[in-house]
Image 1 (cartoon, rainbow, N blue to C red):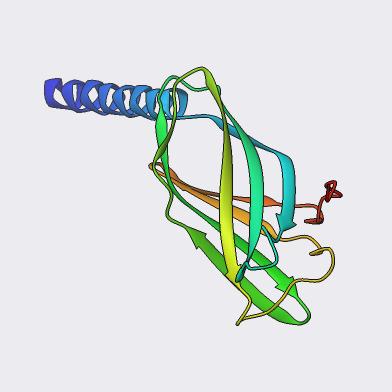
Image 2 (spheres, rainbow, N blue to C red):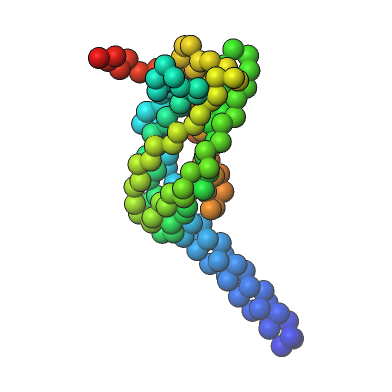
Length: 148
């Protein structure tokens, strides 16, 4: 009889401890929100051998724990060909309850293809300490910069 009471109390204490642990893990993890502020492509000058893609990303961390972005990947289709461009940039830290704006650049050599028009859609994959997040992009356009 006494053993049964001890077993029941132990089981209840175990479930309560597990519930508290799950709650803390969910509450303390980074709560990241990503917003694409700009996505463009351009060729630096007539001597350039690459197309540069530039994605301006706003990262809001609403959580109680920071995280570090280690790598970003730009995936898109252009003329029935899939491209996966990797940016192994310097680490970007998203501090708890903070906001970071970061520009990520990707380079596509002309020997692979030469971009001539808008890139329809695509995906930016952000690899961070606590996982990865895939963000859908609208069209990636060439800006109308003055040539003067």
